[in-house]
Figure 1 (tube, rainbow, N blue to C red):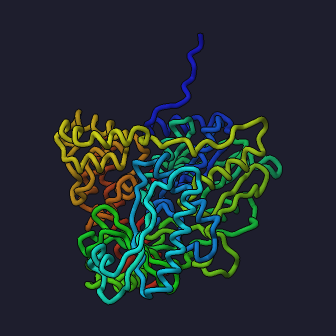
Figure 2: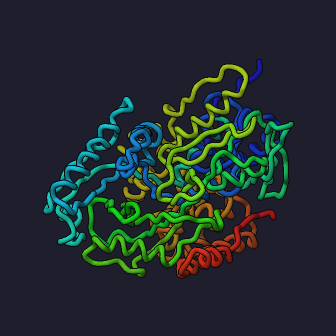
Figure 3: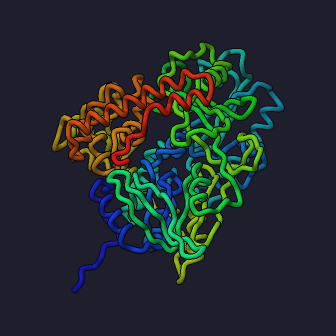
Length: 576
């Protein structure tokens, strides 16, 4: 009797799994090929494969290396969209927030409390309070509890108890409400790995350089494996373009001008140590143009964001000295002791893909998403918010399967947890026992559980066989050496930059941006991936150049000079 093929595959996403995926991409026709390994692309791959389709996904760089790793790290309804009367978008996002918190990824998505301070005692309290009430009500409309408490009002005294470092004369009271936060890059890597587990053939560092066409119909793509230099064809019945800010470039390859344009808006965030000011809550502050978030992030604060047009290099948007000064100026309006440039330990810049007309200001462009069958065989999905990625992915695959033969099941991703989620609460309840068994501090186990969920067992197995891997990385005490090895063997990390910038957040959280961790991490990766001494030195050299270029770009006065300086550090690509 023939052995039955399993429904799922290995939960690993290492070099062997990548090689096997590329083998399949070269030899089998796919039902769906997804181009782009950000939050929407990985979500689309999981959506398609869990409908029973044969699915491939390729990403030109690392998972989430574009916009999806450089967000405000919030899973939120978008309270400012209430003021724009975009109730549908807010409701949709709040329903998704509850789903992510409670069902899909409770180990990665966590509640976070925000303070909205008030400057006017009566009208503003009534106006903002009505908006918060609506926010809470929308969060109950998804058929399940919202997963966070409802808002409440604070007096001036209660406000200063919650946030002692705010200026005493700045506010008359406030409101506290809840949203959620997530390590965006880790979530996307986990999503890619979950899609692979269910049978999708996924490969990073594979760049699409053209489309295969029969007449006007797209029937696949021409791909370039940047690790080996090999070029090959991928045949697919439907192709989904989920390339975010690169949407227009991807569409141009098929000779299609598009019914809409995607504009890039640059958002910059600062990372500041948590001890620089005292507050038990995050802050949401009004600015002249938009809002400013101050988000608690482990032992740090994230402060952002800016919202400016960007038409330079999309792969490496650069923060300028003016961006950093603007954010410090905005947050210092409310702090009793101002922050200075010396307090900034990390800076990152990302690009939002906004649906655009020809002359709109980016701060007013739509956060709605659009799905279109731009030419036969090619579906494009663009715009949207990180929080609503699952809806965007579902809509894109719905559009693609409408053109396929046969009856294809509807989306099931509202019921599918990411790897590591099932059993997380039980593991969390046992964290003290686990810590004692492995001779590590309970805080360390909590850190691992909140990054890997029940897959923490696999890291603990590594530590059991190699006890030295429980040591922290130099200059980055929050992360242990086992996480570097695991990123290379199980999470698809192919280069040092993948680990320090995305599988961990050392590049933005460490004072030295990961310079002291780089040699140790490169050697650990080298042992796992079979690198020789020259390769290890090359990886470290490229990473150090990246850090140097980023620091230098952040001293520049404008976008053009910052972009020029940032691009002095080349990308690490194993094959040109």
